[in-house]
Length: 305
Ligand SMILES: [Ca+2]
Image (cartoon, rainbow, N blue to C red):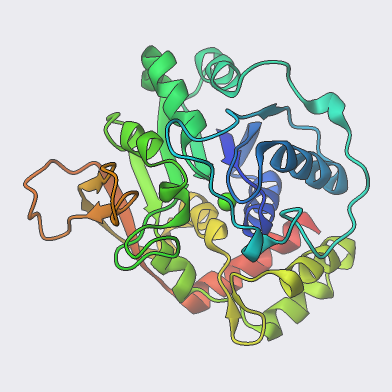
């Protein structure tokens, strides 16, 4: 049976890929999409979710997330995704009727507390909305299956020396989430670096009708890696962990989020050698079989086309 899923996302070109894969997978049933502040501002990520849904002919309820990180000043990634967050393709004007008039934590609570089956949370953005949900509705956690997320890094970061964008975007939120006791599976930065999408794959995707053409256009503007040497479609790795975990190797560990101001603010210390002597709180994807991933990725996108 399809697992009920909520997606928290900040589209974002790699988000658009992950959302499309999840919307068309038979293994999951997407109940709600929460637009989060991240790659671009919250008003724009909301519009981007709506545009994508409209383009894909979907009508999943959408909620606008909390407008910014809990404490940290907002950070964005216009340099990677362009000014709109989805630069490279002209989407039709979105249908705003899908937007629910609630806060994101309220909307997440509604879905989780009314679900007959445990709900899986997918996090492919800073974790602000999930952290607020956890603080406001702690009793709901018993009806959450797990959080599957893209974020953090084993080694060096893509935002700070030691911090990855989704964690650095709201370190306090990440700390709340990792200390919540939720079961968490993580696609860290390194997986996206391993599983690069080469031009021959992008060109193959371009042949898949209007959806394939849309992705190709976005990929040609995306600055997560290089179109020529390979794109890093980070958020798709979280979708991969949820839908096809056999492609990965995992290791359980403690993840400690650094939330003291300073050069390491927002770092995610993945303590594989147990130097901190703290209990395990996450399962980290450490490597991916790239050939298997590429095969899966192409097939998964094809489902949306
Ligand atoms: Ca994202």
